[in-house]
Amino acid sequence: MAKLPCPESNCLSHHQVASETVHGANLALRQVKCDACIEENEVCKCDNGGIKGMVKTEDVDQQAGANSSFLHAVLNMSLGQLSTPYALENGGWASVLLLVGLGVICTYSSHLLGKCLERNPNTQSYADIGENAFGRKGRVLAATFVYLEIFMVLVSYTISLHDNLITVFSGTQLKLPGANLSTSQLITVIAVLLALPSLWLRDLSSISFLSSGGILMSLIIFTSVVCTAIFGGVKANHSIPVLHVKKIPAISGLYIFSYAGHIVFPNLYKAMKDPSKFTKVSIVSFVSVTALYTALAFLGAKLFGPQVNPQITLSMPQHHFVTKIALWATVLTPMTKYALEFAPFAIQLEHNLPDSLSSRMKLIIRGCVGSILLLVILSLALSVPYFEHVLSLTGSLVSVCICMILPCAFYIKLSWPQISKHLLMLNLSLIAFGSLLGVLGTISSAKLLIKSLLRTHST
Image (cartoon, rainbow, N blue to C red; front, top):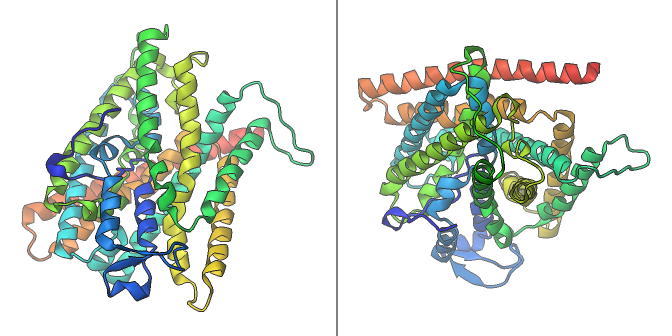
């Protein structure tokens, strides 16, 4: 896939609409700093990093920038992309106005985060913005939502992995003596265990390139749907209902999740050669993403109608070669993202460990905690295998706060009392709208999730 040009030579790195791998990758690069080298403005890759030698901080920044293309910012959408046809079919074609509207709001909120970052050049992360605005409580609140989103995204990734593995290995029969696991569950366990050793890597810069897998996945999914429409013998002749008002709260969570990349924006902002272009690049990025979402949503809904699966890859004809490629891309992507997604957890944990512990002991603790968390995620994914409901709950409960409510609240607090009355009213209105979407969406998706669980256990 050809790269889109970076306006003014500025590149956003990995706009993770479904996930936060850039944050992990950048943290992984920054992790090699040791206290002895900070005063020299150098990154030390000595005993703490497991690699000898010294490299300048700006060299690391350039390395991060080299891995940060504008294409990443536009097309790394993964999970959100899978569900847009399902959301449009259930919400009606008029719900595309909500999809586009949320895209506009998230573009504006990314602009607000840029303005917050301008006010304090030392700000490095989303949690830092929270602390600048509301002190220690703001940092704790922001960090809680950041880690909760990462955790729930990983659960959704694992559910997607399970669902697609069922199709990839259809007809396969596996049994483990003493384990009450179905074939699909057993295959999922094996896949997650294969990915588990990557959580023990201390220097993730060697695998940071894997975060670009989301770009390839997005391209494959879109291309496969188009190929299905052109060559697959499936006619796009299904009618899409105008509007299902009762389903809007649930699908709003799916839509907002699709734009959930705000926690990495501080990293992207810092990676740009000219941060003043951040808003311009954000606009182009969100417009491109929204256009692609809209096209895929209408195409998928027209092709498969009411039978469209919450993951579009599972609706396509299984015997087609392009479908098999899309399925494998959907399977492999989560397996390559676990380590990078866990990086924020792991690095924060390691920083909180006593200095008296050896580097090896810290690595062991970090690896064990990461492994336990991954097994918890696996257990949740197998216990609650309802992709659309979990994704909707994530969007309504967490993503709406990170993408809409908190950026507006941060900006109001940091701009007070210079903020104009009109701008104040706009941001307060967005906070109210986001809160309404969040509450209604959380209640709706939680009810649907509980009903699905009760239905499963009653059969």
